[in-house]
Length: 627
Image (cartoon, rainbow, N blue to C red):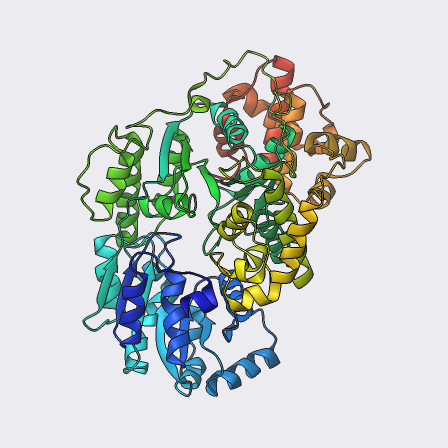
């Protein structure tokens, strides 16, 4: 079945043992790193059992993608969540009672409903699989109260095996998972937390150094898939605009986007249409993309577990990848500020413990890999990894000195650009023609759009690269490619072989030559047309504060004249008086000193004009609008 449905000739480490435990009806706890193949561990036994595995997942997008991927493989699967119309939900519930599905995905909130429990008691259940199981523990980095309700599973379904899966759980969290889910003599499978193909690189940044290094890093990873994690929604938009000004194509992902826009942006990145995605931590859970060459964090994560999980989205194909943490002292202050807002004393204490652990991680001059393994209760036999900034060589792009800031520094929109286009070819891999690789990526994008599914469902990156190396010419050849089971070969084989034939006859990937207006120029043009900040934000798909921040930067650099109409006439003298008294280096003290009705955006615009007139420039704190 492994070969027939998944197109794999062998299991990954631990997978076969987990599958056997579930087929034997045993409770199971599995800790396996991101990309280790957890989903197959419950999908395969569900298929073999001929009953229904109930998978509890916290993310709607993950449910939808996995159900679509299974259906495409010929495995009956479905999901139940709020995106479905009432009649669709009723139909799925009816089919589940009849045992028509091998896997059914539910959210923990759905499972908490009494009507869900009574309905599930009529479904022929093979076992329950709890994904992201660390969410059940208060000691976990991503505790979710709804997960606590899963402790009722044992009472409501006493004869059903329960399997818990997570990528990031300390010893304490693992014990809590076993206790909360009341697992009975569970089989425990804990993979090593050491990811030897990853290189951990940590650097404390000062002033404008962070954005300079980000641009330099993305030039270094040019043509590769990169995730950039930003601490706030506003910073996501600002970073995307900054990168586009540098000539680096990037797209954003955050919780305030419309669901459809998030879906489109994620798919554009997944299908390699745009290589760089800037997102909040809302992005990434369940992302099934193996060939990510770098994950770059622009702030201090709140815990080692969070960092390990997010950074671990790099290099899931087993090839070398970088995990870069560019943090600033103010990140620590912001984390401390939010911890102080926690009302529950025990929760606050746990947050402080996580804070001190992540500070120790970035401050310590000892092997990063060793620190991570020890945090999760694993004691490596080695002390040096040669794959982190402490044990090995830091790449040149991280050590190149940043030009010192002059009294009249240029804005980020005037700095040197790095050529990069959305259609640029990937970095050449051994034995792979980069033009063929890009041609097949475009073919995959076209098929995905036509079928309205994610590109990775059509074909994983690892399968695509193997096809490029081996260039199969028959369906029999294609069936020997990893990831091409019978159903996938039948569905895509003829078209894929035709695409390879056309490439052999001279077809090449198309290049988008259409000119793109850079964000600053577009904003200036829209202001010249008389558009308001709110209208510009809507037109450009940005937060209002992002537009105001860009306008303020353009004022400071002399590219735009301050317009008195932008700030209420009665507020202007009040703001200017506070600036005279406190100075214009920092925005936060000004906000605290001014009446509550005066916004950060209004302060920022007045400060930009004063700095321009004085020929000075503020520090990085000007981005703190709501901390």
